[in-house]
Amino acid sequence: MSGTREKIVEMADKLIRVKGYNAFSYKDIADPLEVKNAAIHYHFPAKSDLGEGVIVHELETFAVQREQWRRLPEDEQLDKLFDVFRRHCKAGNICLIGSLAPDFETLPEDMQGKIQEMTLEILEWVTACLEKGRKKKLFHFKGDAEDRALMVMSNLQSSLLLSRVLGPHVCQRITKRLLEDLR
Image 1 (cartoon, rainbow, N blue to C red):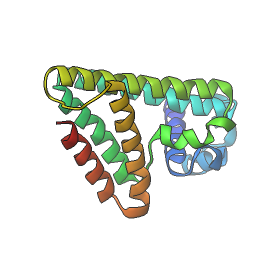
Image 2: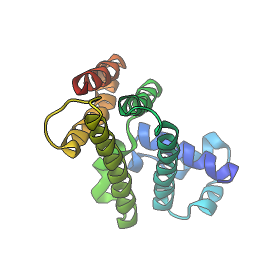
Image 3: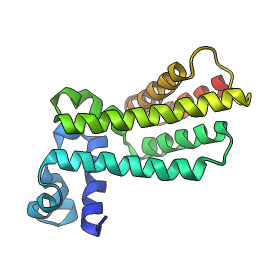
Image 4: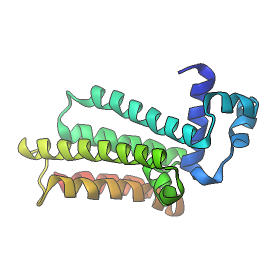
């Protein structure tokens, strides 16, 4: 990604996680980056193009992280994912999926598809991590691994939302309890 394009995506990502997709404009990006709206439109002609760019960047980041984690035991891999959420909590962010989901029905079809792709990719990874960890006796839980992955994902997302209201300690408590309950 070019420097300007990357900065635009990073700023849009932050705005989506803090304000929500429908609550920011190109001006909210242009002013802090000290660029003209035209510069943003050059890279992202429509706001949905920018939204898709943020999602693609998140998917690329997640792919790099998974590669870095893949040699770790599954309980440590899951804890690395929890660390991502803890960092977002400290930054005052919410999960990208959690931020885009409330606006899902108002978003263009292409962007909805990218959100579904991102959600399914993360869900599949968490499911595989849980199932492999259970086979190695690192995790102990009843039921289907995908059902448990859905519970983990929904708890992680809600930990960020509740932390906004009750403080960052909530995220710490939820992630600690999630991992303890799996072991």
